[in-house]
Image 1 (spheres, rainbow, N blue to C red):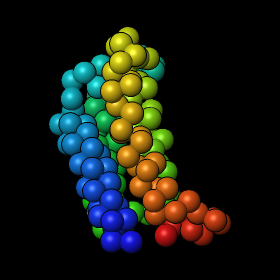
Image 2: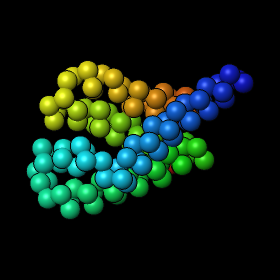
Image 3: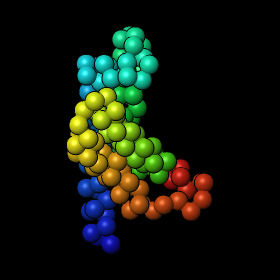
Image 4: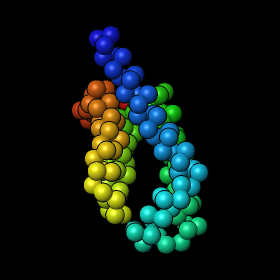
Length: 127
């Protein structure tokens, strides 16, 4: 049981670090990321920058939340978002290996979600 708590904390810190780091890049308006929006129909730089800012704020809040309490619904979102942001790389023309390299971005939150326990009912998603 003691090892499970240690593993949980390692995953919580790893997931928080990944989301905090990406969140800060987004808040700073990382130029490459802003350019990727055009691939999805958002060519206005101001709109892309604003959207990226809010994505960054959400990532930072999730990073803090996972350290305070790993809420299952938040972890599920982190799995989805980590997968999507990894998948974006080959969709915008980067090599497939940029996607493969980022499997931990969704694998770590998924591992933490499985460790804290897959919910048995809708209410447990909020615990």
